[in-house]
Length: 438
Image (cartoon, rainbow, N blue to C red; front, side, top):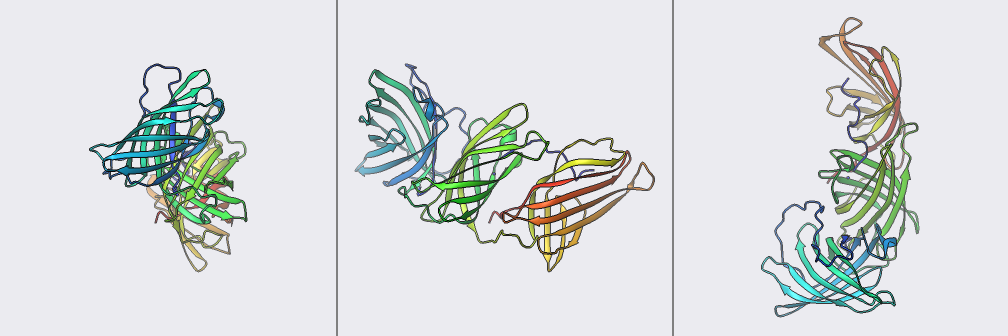
């Protein structure tokens, strides 16, 4: 009974360009803090190239902030304008939410990075300025501008918190109040931030994103997965005014099944003038007795010219089923979730395929967005409990496919094995056609 398996890990994870900064705080400490978070995810080694003298735009996320806890966990934008005179470099950095404008100077190091430092003037009665140190920026061929920095805010009662930050990704460009055209089907890569828990999408996540512009508001289907898990959820979004679109949403998971509820607190995406999508995310997954959170970045998003409205079943499908009932011996029955990967091809109304990597053929005749797929296998080297060779039979009834390419329907699996003759049944849950990687 290999096909219907229980997921080991429940949950997941798959500017111009949108960037991301992780902030930590060594508030009140007299020691200088490292500008790089020790929990930062590994970025694959890549040859560094010289930082451009240009204007960069990106986003950062605050994780701690002395005296401003209300901002923690939120995302803000920044710009960095770099100029050069002979071997001396100057830069102007603008940071929200305080609208800090820092004037920086520094030099280019032998590895191609820039080392800058400087200060920002007063912006309000509460923030009288800031001292910036160890501003290190580099150009990564894959991620754009990356680096780190540290600064201390200055308040009316003296020095404020010592804040460090890590620039994950930003690219040449300026923020635009009008989003680039994001409607369509996209795929790209993700990177989980911080200490990666196995059920939150470690490894090399990928994402598929289908965006619909509904005239001032947006709706999207986000499918984010890695080798350890997956989330797939419909989100609602609005333009933020700086060229990005902010999506949010939640799904309670299947009725009666704990550990599958997901809340996306933030999925922010932006498309640059060259047509590349980047973004950042922040979501939480309910695992029954505990809730885990995940943050990270999306990068390298490319538009895919494929219609994902309800239509042919041809393609790769990922998702699950809810195992609800069992008739027969049922020695191993439980109410729970199992994986339901499918690889299907369609010619006319004829649909062929197989479940995952199992050597079992499925076939059926489609009528619009519905189809009944059936298949059976026999193992002559296995003697069934109720005589004869061991057999397995599958019946997958798809009643519809929605505009996001998600199936609805039921699954029935009959297993005549050495210890049981049982028929397990349940419903399809979040089985969606996958956006091709290229």
